[in-house]
Image (cartoon, rainbow, N blue to C red):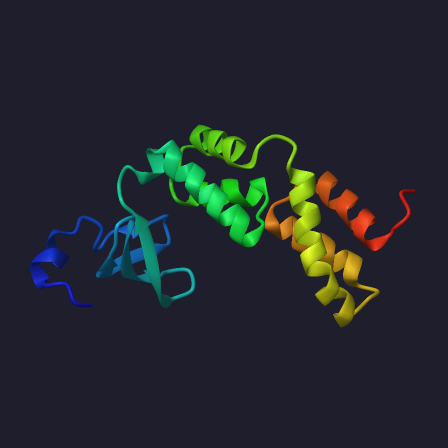
Length: 163
């Protein structure tokens, strides 16, 4: 918390409640894309770090596309999870859809889910082979892949009957 008093007083977010949950406190840091604040999570009654994107970034299709590409590559996230992350950052839903379509391309959900499943399955199978299919299913759903894609990936990787 190295900001001087003038910066804290003039910051429009300090003291406000965001998303009906976070009471914004002192500014901790400011970077090229976002500012980090100390905040009180009023639901959990604890202090958290709150990262707020600078104005205008959520309206930029290039930013949204880069965000999708980075998150999808690093964490193998599916479109539903990417949509939720962009929505949480204030990106317009239509812009988010366009960015996801542009960054991921058509028909890649199955291949991306299969890749994520192949990476995760060995650890799940070592832990408890009988529970591996259910845990893989849950993992892929949390990553944001559609249910039908998840079922096909689990059947393929776990050798389950299609009946």
